[in-house]
Image (cartoon, rainbow, N blue to C red; front, side, top):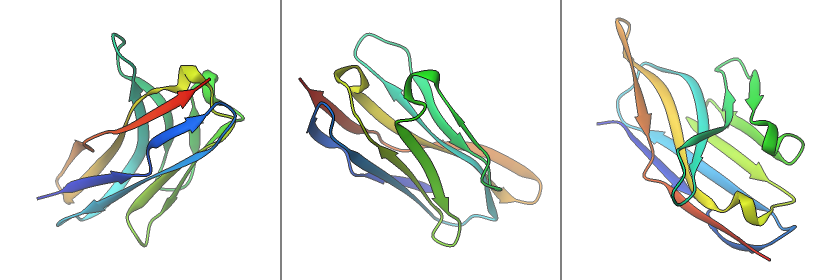
Length: 120
């Protein structure tokens, strides 16, 4: 079984920082793109940041210049460094990975979600 295990969420004051981590475990062949999404109460899940297996990145406009996504391919782990946090960043953050379990197929996997709360 493939699992994505997230950590690093919590409560922080506006202007503060948090670092999220997501580690992939299980039997896999390779990992393609990895990313972070978030979902605030009453809102749809939205893309925060993506990183390809080659290191190319893409960010939502709302987080550009404040958040940085990175990955450690040796550890099958993706990170999200979040700086200058705002109350509107409050949401459940989900890790996502497109994983090749065999040479013939890929599937999308999600973490369980971690709560990030930014207070005023």
